[in-house]
Image (cartoon, rainbow, N blue to C red; front, side, top):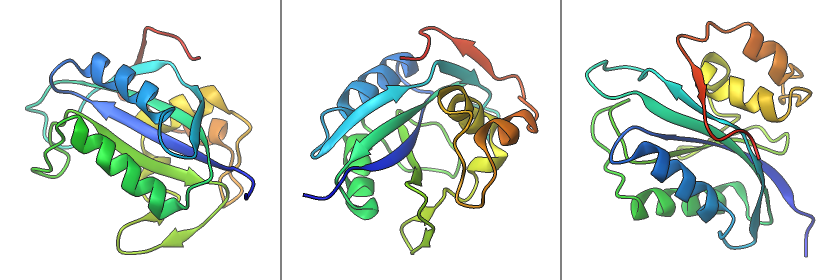
Length: 166
């Protein structure tokens, strides 16, 4: 069997008990086939990206070890979103659970379904701050490190909420 890959997942929720959705999703990531959750960031509250007529989000980042391919992992993440009642309505609208495959090893890829690294992650404090908390030395495929990218962003009201990283 192949060596495990390292994948980084962004989690977010702002509907129907957001803290509960994020906590349950973190546990469920550990139960995905051929995958184990290595660790997770603290949870963060953030203002919504896009339409402001929705509740704040709870966000986190998780590090996984997986033997799945990027697209197979994406399929598993989307199935998990569906189990949490995810409805894909308006862009950047409210959701029970959003799971983004941010990084997969140092792979770069662009397909109709998946872009790696995630196309917008470097612009989003609610992604980069928890990622840098977990792995400040992590280098993205373009050579930049997570801590420097996070430090350069406006935190836009991002605030840490319990629990702390695990």
